[in-house]
Image (cartoon, rainbow, N blue to C red; front, side, top):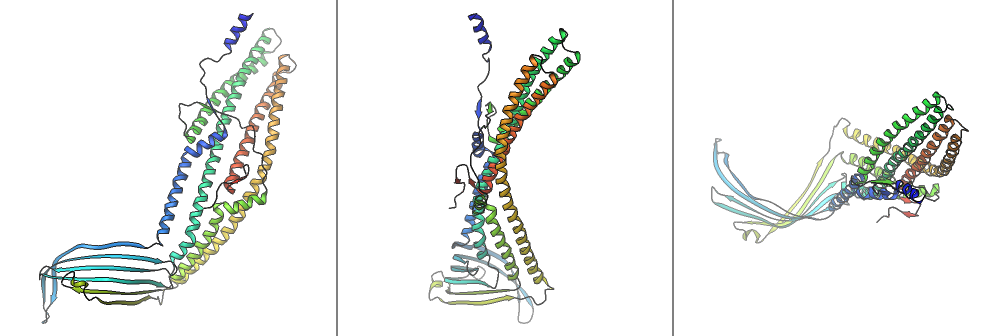
Length: 481
């Protein structure tokens, strides 16, 4: 007797099985955030937006630059009109060089630019062996458009908001990565459970077929029932093959997304529990308005629309003020060009005023005003959708929690009912049709439970993405610098 028990025990030990890693939902999410292509793209985009903001900031800083022409060579024939009206061509050969050191500073308040420059020029007339130098010890120059669109001032209003948007968008994109990971997780979990169900059903239907075949042989079952059970067995084999293919496909999709090595086998653990937290609609809406990038984008878009109107009005006419003051001199040598410098003064106001433009300026301004009004209407609608989305999602979460409780209980009841039906079938109290009904209800209840879990976790990460707040752990997902 002891030898027989030992032999049976040996038969129950798995042979040649490979231990598999079991990942939880949190494991998959963390792997996706660390390794998925979407996470890498979000990280790269975040860095790109950072450097764009640094470039914007540099527009308001002073710029020190060296410019020049070293050297400039020219040899040609110059047309020369003589006193008697005839023209002669004179051969000339010239060499010129220039070097300028300038420090410029934009003026964001007015949109102008002030600069301080120092320059030196050399001119060589090689044909006549003449050398001249011209130097500007320094000059201070102001270039100021009058009544024009001040791009620096408007950028100063919008670009900091845009940069803040980018930082919040990064957190939202990472939460979207988590949501996608949840979808891929449950895609594979569905396939994994469907495979287990198909495997169980095949073994169960094989047993039932053997039982019905035995009953048919002793005359207690009809051929019709035997054929029905055989057909069900064949369908179970077909379902198992399809379930295996679906499992391989979804496993590959999940593995690719989270960046797992193909040689590492793994399974998923069913997330039995759900997070216990309460969400107040008004609180969720407040967090969304405080944290979400879309909400501050509304303000940026309003400013940009107003800026387009200002730009259209600024293009009606052009008035530019240019003024400079400095010290310069000239000489035959470099040193002489810096001796006894004299005043250099420039003052100029240039203007361009169209007299007849056939309504061009008016059309430009009216178009900008219409676009601004359209932007206001679109944003007002998006704000309503924004609020509705949050409120709907909060209410949906409450319903999903109840559905999980109901579907979990239904799964347990359906499982128990099937066991009872199976026992009654074995003793001949019910027929195969009623047993199949109980089997289908058991499978459907399991799938419905997993579907409820999927809907809850997707809604949970949607809420995190839309509010940038983790209600389960009572913490902000983004803190403004």
